[in-house]
Image (cartoon, rainbow, N blue to C red; front, top):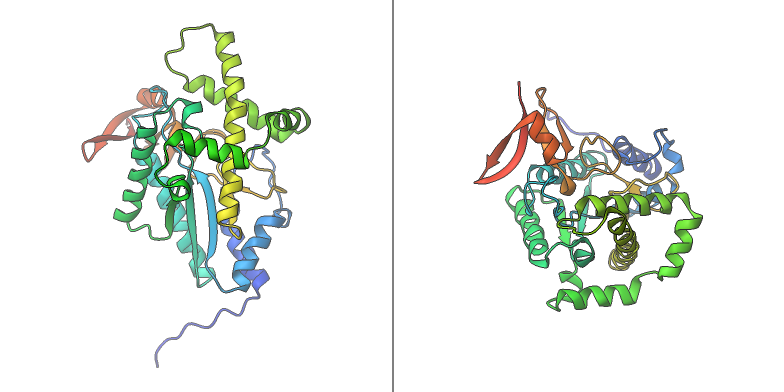
Length: 312
């Protein structure tokens, strides 16, 4: 007698909870305590909407912008093993969801490098090359539950500066409103401070004083957050039903779910600000290139530097 698979008789609510349980271990939060699943009300509600409709759960993730311009952090301006592992993780997560919810899931990677390339001082041609590599890798590795969405999908072949100006004019909060929020909300203040720190670390060839650099990066941090908010609003407009993910730490009651792509030493490290190191036990972590060089040997793949492997 042939074996058959019993139909899934779980309710939409229990199926949604099971899907969310797959996300929860990867929550990226600045708070070391573990929030209960029911506190993530909005992400869970959006997952439930897809489950009730018997449709694939659609996640949007503004991320994978470009490599840091700081050569002490990264191996170059193209994606490397850190990005490849992260993309594979996202595709695997979708496949795991498919075992619980038959229509499965997909992640739309909203590559946001061009959104603030001028503010983070990365050439637009480097951002194009980075985004194109992501698309090529997704195709070649058969990560068919992933897709890439960027400003080219919205504004076509307009010059990059024109795209940024249109995005900012249509969607960005005012500087006055953002300053007030930074002063009033701890979460926004932490984001502003973290962004300022990244900009200081990533600024190359600075000839002024340290205090002048701090002032310059504080100014640019506001611009980056304005554009990031604008991009988030545009993404929500184009994908209004999606479950919103973020690579930044998010509190449990946020509309967005902060997700950790790989093992990292803190809540802020990303593959595009670091390199991947394979430990002796086969696990992976991320760290700045200058630190990885002390622990491991550089490995090349396809003629390009890829990652580090821990020395015995």
